[in-house]
Image (cartoon, rainbow, N blue to C red; front, side, top):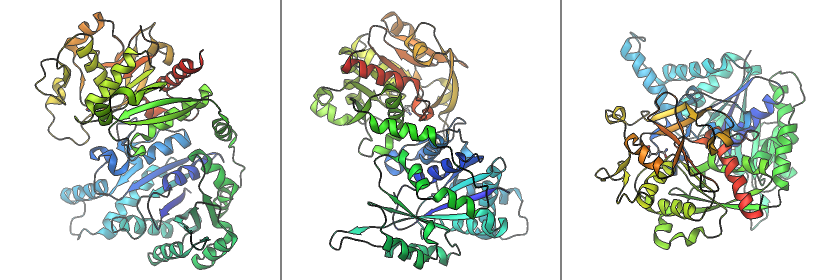
Length: 533
Ligand code: GLN
């Protein structure tokens, strides 16, 4: 029998339910169970692809091209696995499937309703994924009490009835604030949110109490008493320095053992050795390099979550901590490149639209002319091409047609097939495609391979008509798409210490034990710049 663990959240959002779900996934996987994670997003969007990063943080991209919630990135990193678009269930997907079935006549004669049609569709989608696993963690986004999450909670409740109590457990993540004036941890919000959950027919099996400091014994007892959860299952998840410490904390608190017992799974000892080593190594780093991220969504660090993570992974292997300097591209336009002074490396990440593009190009130029290690990603790659066209080739007003459709030098443009597209959802060039790497290039050196698979999310491309002119001026396109050599995938400048940009997003495949090669190379170059080789 498959075992299901549903994760719900109460009191406030932003408690780290995603990290909790990923951590529980890791604790199960580390016990040798075939484990996976599913994320439910109760919003009406079909997928995350059309959302601004300021709404929900970065849009994560999977191998199969699914544009999904950033928590799937956390799951992939914690479990070192690759997920599919079906691992992200949204209200949009569920309702469109049900309406399509209704139109097809699948429910002939019936009145189509939330219960049972929508709830059946939800359960079916969860079970379809579960077929290949022993343990499935299902995180239900939002907070209990939200209108949007009701059908999902109802489906989860039904699943416990249908699968049996031994096979379905509920973990509720709540917040325990400490009021400064009284200096006491307050359990009332937790009591209320569990009450709300129980009114929907769900009795939590474990409470993850998020708090600043470890949970006081009195608070634990109170939560247990009022929520009908045994004391050993009231887990104190206090703030830790780094999210990678959370699985170790939860294991120490006994959550892994408790859940396996509760679900009648074999009582195995988890193997968390490699994970522990990474956490300790990262904490023990004493040298630091500073890398600037010049973007337009920098006010919300989650907009660039996978980039942050890729830098973390690269810092462990390079034995040096990376401090990120967040730089708003528009501030560079106003105040100049002095905002970048002293950094050991620069990243210009992906993005859309005109705001901040000139500032990003100022940063690219600064990196190029001052031999500062540089990595451009997707839009950052395209703007590197534009900057080079303007300032090296002297193509005045060169641009991407995304930003200036009337530019005299459309060095970044749409290929004919993208011009036909009218519907914007899910129609970019999405997902993993093979890239062919030229021998004897920096790209070849960092990847150590001639064909790589990286994840994409873009509509525009380097205009093939200009490639020759770029190359004769010294820019090297060291990677092209295997399926279509008109598509430029990697560029580099051989005269520079470390100057590389990619049309794809290398950050999406970076893992704690397998850092993305171009990030690893960037941090290495930054370290050599600061400390010598
Ligand atoms: N806006 C650019 C395009 O659509 C780049 C996209 C991105 O950076 N992800 O091609």
